[in-house]
Image 1 (cartoon, helix red, strand yellow):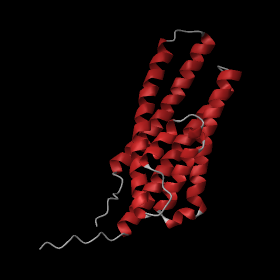
Image 2 (spheres, rainbow, N blue to C red; image 1 turned 180 degrees about the vertical axis):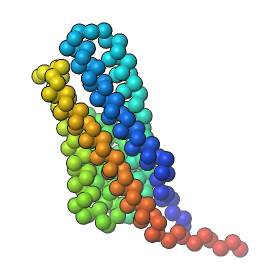
Image 3 (cartoon, rainbow, N blue to C red; image 1 turned 30 degrees about the vertical axis):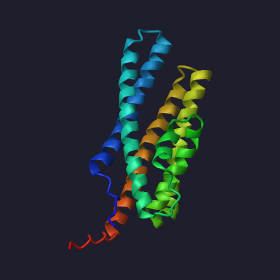
Image 4 (tube, helix red, strand yellow; image 1 turned 60 degrees about the vertical axis):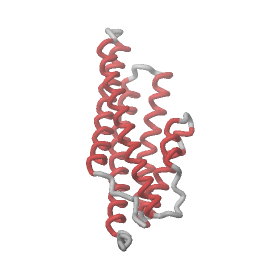
Amino acid sequence: MTSTARRAPRILVRSAQLAIAVSAVADVFRAAAVRDQYVDRSDASESGLISMVFVYLTTLAIVLFLVWLTQSRRNAQELMPGAAVPSRGRTIGMWFIPLVNLIVPRGIILAIGRASSASWEEKRGTTLVNAWWAAWVGHGLVLTVASRVAPGSMAFLVVEEALMIAAAVLAGLVIERITALQNAALGATVPAEPLAQA
């Protein structure tokens, strides 16, 4: 029996982290341009262009993150076959169901982390995921409240973008932590002997 678990390619890990970071920075520029357009009632073409670039960058970040997540899920399942790791469809699908995506994906990441290494149970991994998730959901909530209560508010803009940057940094750290744990575990496992040829 051969192992199907593979180390996440370094290029995938770094690409996902970079795309998330660039998307967060683009969100700052997008939010500032939209605010300026709202406050100054200026031409929307600049904010529209920046928003379009943001959407493309965010789409790339989402795709790379989900590819990394799928690879990590497969590795976690291989490393701990009896673990409660969700199916590939659920791992990806839960991100796209409104309201469910505020709760379930955090549990999926935690399940992958727990299945990746016994050392995950130390509070470090769980705390990291919880901090990332709080920043991510907090950003969405502040963005929603700001758009209804005080559109164009600089205070809300600063808070929402600070949460977005924090969520991006923490997401990069979550990716790094799970990948490092899986790579260490995969490096420690002894590959199965190939069948002897007759």
